[in-house]
Length: 283
Ligand code: GUN
Image (cartoon, rainbow, N blue to C red; front, side, top):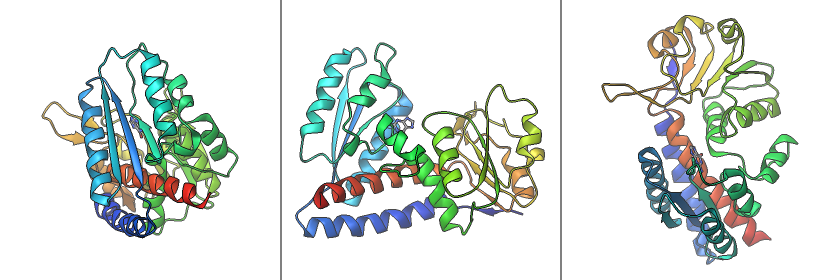
């Protein structure tokens, strides 16, 4: 029976550590500030943004929320981003994705100053991650690596399989596992014989967004299963991408949904904001 990786408890510990760093910065006269920009009314995004803002405030980080209407012109959003780039009270800028269809996401991300890009989405930061010298690592992948570390799981030499190739999770977590010397396979919608590849994974990271996509029977005995999926069922409950009960019988470690990766994403956003503030202070 797998050990459940308690992301909620680990994230809580991380947040306490971050709060100590924030207190120390405040003693030096620096209050880290995070600007969160939301465009439109997507219900999931509104919840994420509220959670990020509340978490920042609980940690002693100033949060500046900018909620713009759905029909905001791209130029207006760019003007706001540029203003936040210049604002000394703001150390981190997060523009919640997805953006409405009339806005070019890449243009907005590139407008964020790389020194304030706490999401790690700017091409400069992506390039730094690719070349093994990261400045800001994207929050969800960073949270996954932190969960592994704090659970005593060493990726070096292990076969890691990442299912999903998004810029937010799949691609960066593959790079981060590679940087820690795992042998990484990335699977996606066009992968053939995915069950065979998954069944060889010592470490499986699944970020697809489809309930039950990974069958419990595919899971390798004694493996580590990190489920990034958040899927709402008709009865209102939340589940991941992996058939949890069967995975739990086979794996050695497994993350639950909810309470696994999710809480770590927010903790890492706070961590990156503190990092941004420290970097500015230290020049
Ligand atoms: N939408 C889903 N995940 C994320 C994230 O980590 N950052 C931002 N900005 N938007 C998201």
